[in-house]
Image: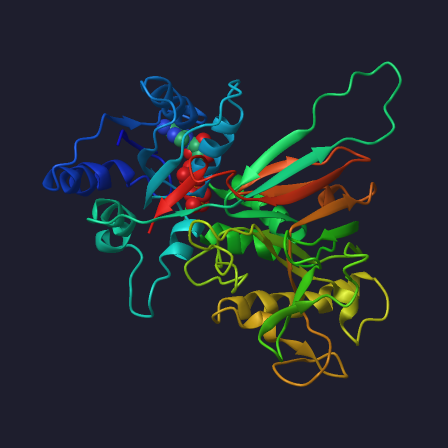
Length: 409
Ligand SMILES: Nc1ncnc2c1ncn2[C@@H]1O[C@H](COP(=O)(O)OP(=O)(O)OP(=O)(O)O)[C@@H](O)[C@H]1O
């Protein structure tokens, strides 16, 4: 099978080059595996060119290829989007990736290889799990689902102004708006001063009192018929009360404090299990069903909420922080409820603090007067919805076993 090795030398703490030189390449050699090419990315966008050129150089364009990819989630996102934008109408071959986590958060890797209590994610042994899976006698690769986000402009066109094509971004990890998109937007500016995950916490504190105005629609996943919601009492997804077989689409109004969907993953950092059931839908070849796990917080569900005000937002910030804190406790936030006074508790029958949804897609139409509600984060990439426009995100699964992306696990 054709094999390309490629790594981003500046992902995360920039240790990728040393990791490949000292460990990945020697491991391949030891197993008598010779890559066709070993490449280092030289700048944004380069990974797409390297892999597209490699595919174009192969005599058989339908043959499955393997790529050992040293990167964070951002470089993988770039690769998927670059290949999707290739001008060819032919489907691409199946691309099996052996991931080497070199980025800051490595959400996909830590979700596929969830670290045990005493496992250290910075060790070489931990980082080589996917490469070792690729090199095993009977390698197994899990197909990736994708979340396709399309930003559309206002329906009424301004006379005389051309309307560009809708902007599309494909995620393998996360598509979000509200707090998470704001955090990612602001944390980019902090990257130079703080390359660690600490920059996400700093940006979170800058944004925690904000709420976001939008109208939302939720669509069922294929095969389910209805939108589902996690019921902590049943510890399972059950039909959403506003979704029926006849009228499955759920309409929601804001304001929203948090709105984040994941695909393929149950966590965004080793311990931040924001969509704790998110890996359930990653199933072996042949039994696929693409779904998004959506985590929402709408402050007015709090029984102590009276009206939107600066004070109400400041008070609710403590609750939002408690929710995010519980996500670090093995995803315990999805079990939290309000008691009658609005206190957050782990038991009872009050409204859940988090609405944890499983769906096939969502549509987010931001209020025009709320500029921050226009940010969408697709695997760390920040997109801006044009005024009057909306974002539609849909879960997708590879068309067949011979195309799409898969990860050696
Ligand atoms: N040689 C290079 N010099 C500068 N930037 C590069 C180079 N090669 C790739 N890049 C850019 O580096 C960016 C960051 O990479 P990546 O997402 O892999 O790491 P990260 O942001 O540290 O990790 P994570 O996404 O897990 O937080 C990519 O978006 C890519 O465009």
